[in-house]
Image 1: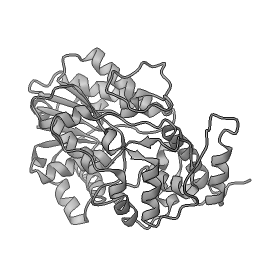
Image 2 (image 1 turned 180 degrees about the vertical axis):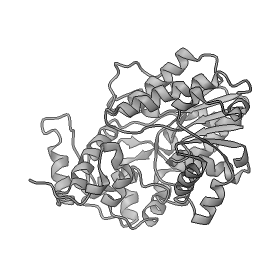
Image 3 (image 1 turned 60 degrees about the horizontal axis):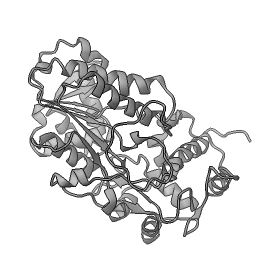
Image 4 (image 1 turned 30 degrees about the vertical axis):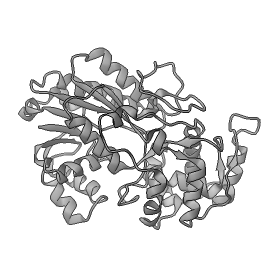
Length: 385
């Protein structure tokens, strides 16, 4: 039996649908927050409906077994099915960029609670923990990052999410060395090669905003590491099922061959007719004398309405621009050496992402807005000058 957390999220939902397609969904036990099993299945079906039609989603949601609860509840759960678990895939996480208590409660305390219960699972063969490649912390103008132990708490981070994920990895290694742990670190998961942004527009709004404003806080010859959710979830299945893995830590990333250069990025948006303000992009350095002024001016020109939505979107864009400024990509040679399929390039499915939705950039931002403490109910509220 496979215990899966995070199935009501973007990557976790895609992972579960792969299990449906390969005929193993009935062997999946999904940990989902909800008052009872019916409420949990309804949450699952709602998420899967973003990947498929309603009938298919509801049918898929009925195939698995459900364990109502959260990560912390596992410590006291007496459900006998937990003792039959042979594999764990831990995708659940709080991805907030702000310093919220829940980030640490879920990403660290919750992960350790799951590991504590895993220690008592007599048949456990593999514990696949999903981290993030950006647990490496903020380091400007890094060209290629290789798999290494997560840095200590004092390392600089752009978001509390990445800091907490680094802490979770360190805590797992220190407290549970006996677990059959494999760590997978995806990079930036954006869109789906066949469905575009139907499953989630998360982060894609930002790349549209970048093209729309025409301003880039990175070197013109730099690059970024972007992967589609369907390729990422397929590689997680590979890492789960291959018995003779050579390592215990893998980047699930675009790597050198499929990383996206900014030249290709802007050419791709131009080729698909996206409304961009100016190409080639104007480079700026937010750490320089002008700070964020070039971005602020470009943002106001592209989004002149002073709504709460736009103000929050500007905050989110600044955060993501700091990631962009690193010109970072992550080596995936370990993953490819296992014989797994290589990733597609972002520009190869960019047109699918653009064609899959007629939503505005602001409307797509709402998928990510909760990470920046944005209240959707107030999205149309004007902001005083």
